[in-house]
Length: 155
Image (cartoon, rainbow, N blue to C red; front, side, top):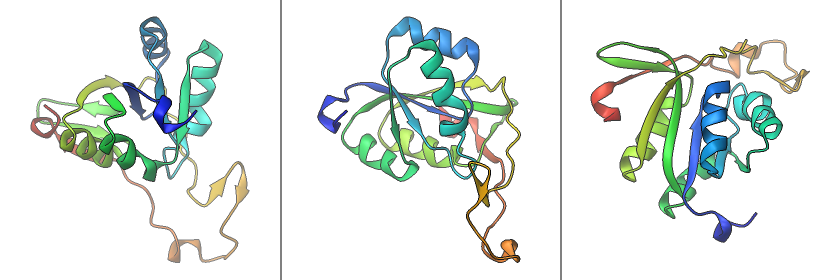
């Protein structure tokens, strides 16, 4: 799929739930699936669910999202979060990045609880293989953390 073929896609961030997959399937939206670093949530989880449901999607690396937003290719963002209270939403690593891009480009953000909390594993592994071969991994990798975002930012 080329960039010109993408029009009014929905971006999903965090592990998509089965209920959301059913809703997205009923709308016929094209879904933008970022890789979801550092744990590759898009590749390991979301793409598998979308394929199984027969949903049309396009995979992008996380860094390409800015280009898609700047070219008005994304019309809605769905953030799957871990926790929400009356002041903030606690999301997965990268949630702030997606929220800021959405706000800067006036894209509506929808918040949905993540039903499938993945075992995140280690950021030094990819596909079950170590890609940092040094023994002192903590010198090269900063552990990923959840991100809290004020609800006022998301509205």
